[in-house]
Amino acid sequence: MFRKKVVVGLDLGSYSLQWAAIEPRSNACYVWRKRLLSERSSKHDRLDHQSLQGRLRALLATAERETPVWNPSVVAGIQGQSVICGYLEFPELTKKELEVAVLSGVTREIPFPIETMEVSHLPVAALKEGKTGVFYSTWRRADAQRLHSLLGGCDIKIKRLEATGVALTRELFRNRKLDAEAFYLIIHVGFELTQFIAVRGGYPYYLRDIPVGGQDVTYAIQVGAQTSWQDAEELKHRYPIEELVFAAGPLFREWSYELKRSLKYFQRRYHVPEVAEVFLSGGSALLQGLPEWLSGELGLPVQLDGWSLLNSRQSDEEAPCHKIAVGLALGQ
Image (cartoon, rainbow, N blue to C red):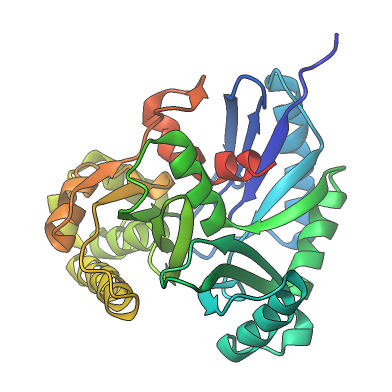
């Protein structure tokens, strides 16, 4: 029996492995997700390289059996401290001149030697008339090589790496009909960090990683209640956001401050007086009442981002967890 041809996105985080496949003809979306650790006792629990590769090999074999479509060649996401993204503007240039200008511009923007980095960029609509706009992504070559080695040992071939913020932007605009002239925010709450992305017309313009994620909420509850990690996880999802803010006030104040700071910086730097709406995603975005709390903190409408135009076989409740992998799969 022949399987349908699909494009696959793979998002390997510190909490889970997420896999998504898109049928190019029908836009049908298949998603699959499993935790890397079946049990966890603290936020510092991690697998070493060998153990992680063994776990991934087992998970991917399960995914191949359980999903109706498969392709061992994937677009993989990359994120972390060495991944830096940003918007640059140039005068009108030839393609060759632009390549040189982007490399020069990125060199001035990043704190790492450019010869140790891989650089990718995509053309975006310029914010100033008569200019050429690009959004660049760069990451350490050593990190990319480690990811290639890790997945290669699981018989998975990475045909392209992409910054996860770019994938999130693509997924949002393929999933929803939005005003092409308006700016929107994506707030993606993962296990380790929150990604703050300002987007317009299908393009990202500003991305910042905020080092607050679901693990920090669980840890704050664990310490405050003097309980186990598993019990703290259950409490996190059992109680509404107001109770969590009361129990872990300093953490939520820090998170709110960093989100507001990011919004103000973006608006000031790029002369954006108004943001239309915030789309909330990520596995740690499923806290009860989080959209309403964020709306009150930011003074903007916030909605948990489910499925809309994309035809997924997964429930809408699970949609926020799969946005990165789906966005990667859409980048065929």
